[in-house]
View 1 (cartoon, protein in one colour):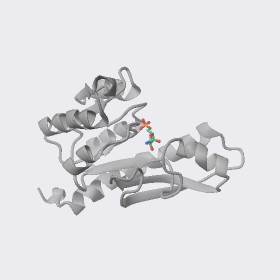
View 2 (cartoon, rainbow, N blue to C red; view 1 turned 90 degrees about the horizontal axis):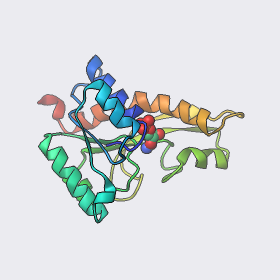
View 3 (cartoon, rainbow, N blue to C red; view 1 turned 90 degrees about the vertical axis):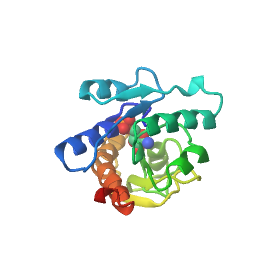
Amino acid sequence: MASGAGSNFEALVAASRSGALPGEVQLLVVNQPGCGASARAQRLGVPWQLIDHRLHSSREELDRALIAAFQQARVDLVVMAGWMRIVTPVLIQAFPDRLVNIHPSLLPSFRGIDAVGQALATGVRLSGCTAHLVCEEVDAGQVLVQAAVPVLADDDHASLSARIHAQEHRILPLAVQLAAQRLGLDQN
Ligand code: GRF
């Protein structure tokens, strides 16, 4: 699931294709027409689908459309790789322990939107990213993998984001692998 540039989606595809991540990316779902993630899927030859939140009457209806797409694609795990919508218990309960999110902070610091801006505004010297299981409280599920990066004196939003992104691309495939192992999916 992606809403924006899709660099984490591409990192998952690359990890799968290199053999570093056992498993395949079956389907990308985006909610923003024309987003970078769908262009990457096109280039990489990964099936993708637009499920536009504006065409659904509620968050729950959107989640039901997502579930239908994932069930049809017979996925074992769902990854929110830059999905900029709040998901509801409808989706979370359909994929218990199978829904992974990546967030650009060392949770539990800086939950919610613009975690990079929050880190810069607070003046922390260390930030990073967290891959975690999704629960009903936003950005609060069980941590799978974290990576820390320094916040440098001359950092701006772009430079700190880039440093964090590089680590996201490293830890998200590891987190997916860990979640799959915990579920015994690697035995199948
Ligand atoms: C990442 O920083 C992720 O942590 C956040 O949204 C961003 C998505 O980046 N949830 P991309 O679309 O994968 O490039």
